[in-house]
Length: 355
Image (tube, rainbow, N blue to C red; front, side, top):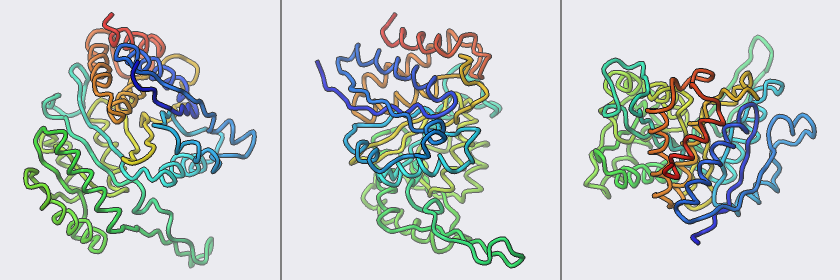
């Protein structure tokens, strides 16, 4: 028997537990075939626990997370909890405390999936965004002056360190090299306006590029990047950018690959515990109805296995997802798939096993 991986399961809120259950079903099928196993620990952090106990994500849990090989997340966001409390208290706290300094977001259109981009298909829409995940505007630096008065001032500061920028850029070069598709890395920024932060990003980008002569480099302002992601997505291979811009452009990318039902992401610490999740949110209106699309969560599991070095299992899952889309699904939209959430999980798992 192969290696046993310690995985933390956090279903979270809304439909999160439902899609995570199908993801677990699929990764376990892949483990059976490929000859490894999981030691799974479930955590109930989310809105229900917060409303009952007032506890969001204690420091003791962070220490437990450090001992895991990865965290597999469903979704965070409860309709009865003020927006921001759970997101900051669970997602951002975990990212920062575990130093998950890379947010990795593949933008890949599978055959048979509709995209709003006219005349574009799987050959044109296949790139990856590497987003810096622990600095920038998300650090929470800033504050208010004369709050709730006519003279109120709000300041939100973007913090970019040489260390943080360089390790993100270097990860992007290494990822581009490993991906070995077009061997092209694009820096997305705003050097004409954000002249301090992106001066640092641009200088670091060109300095690190000297270590990767085989990688073609390119630059695009963030507004132009949005335009080209719609008009000519085939120009991109790997894109690297800061926290805020990465948050924005990856949602645009998700829509071009078929929507939130298929988009997955990883919060990566290459030297520590990483966390993988579907990006579509908790979708509370669909909770318990067996209609939500689990493919994004399944793809997040595929990313997790790839990150853990189980590339054979990851490849099996991706091919099984493609088969399911091509042969068994009417749509990627909730309630319109032609099958229920659990049934889609079963179908993917069966394809993984070769059934």
